Image 1 (tube, rainbow, N blue to C red):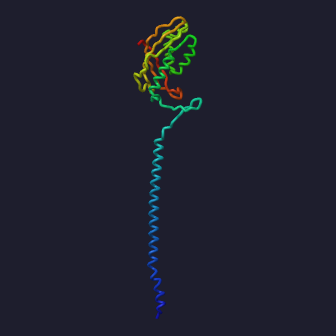
Image 2 (cartoon, rainbow, N blue to C red; image 1 turned 135 degrees about the horizontal axis):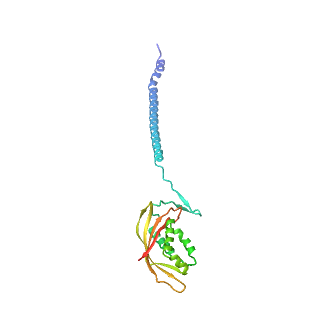
Image 3 (tube, helix red, strand yellow; image 1 turned 30 degrees about the horizontal axis):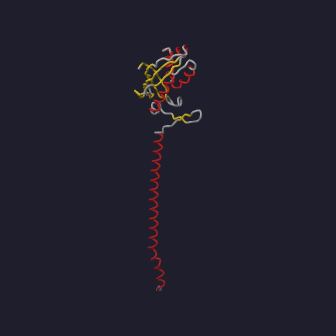
Length: 223
């Protein structure tokens, strides 16, 4: 027959079993929780990878448009604006046209070569060629040189834009400007002739012409 002390000692391990089972269950719960967290993290990572791949694919199919700039001789940047866009404000345009038309008809018998050279940048190649032909056809150059004259141009009204839009892939403006043209000699001066200048201005590439404008056609008629 066993003693009471021995009965107590043999019963103790049986009492400790529920606690051990609980610890196992707690361990399993923690492992399951970690497994769930790991699965959620894997799903989140997979989603981020899908989004990243989609973003790279979008960029590959829709690359950003590059921006190009030209520079002047002193290093200043010149934006390369498409010639199908106006580029300049109308006030700036009209002020420049007034100066260009005035310069185009201001000649004297001493400096006419320098004056023609100075007005050349205001024109396109075709525009300047036609302007020279018009001066020769009208006898203006010959009269200035042989009769030792000085031509004087005075705008009599602000220039007006009568039409504008894209013309042959270039933005263009048709401008009319009223002016008075007279000739002065050594001992006489002609009465100012009232004229209307019809000017066709076109956009030019800014890397070729920094102002982005050129006179493509210049015609005068009586007002």
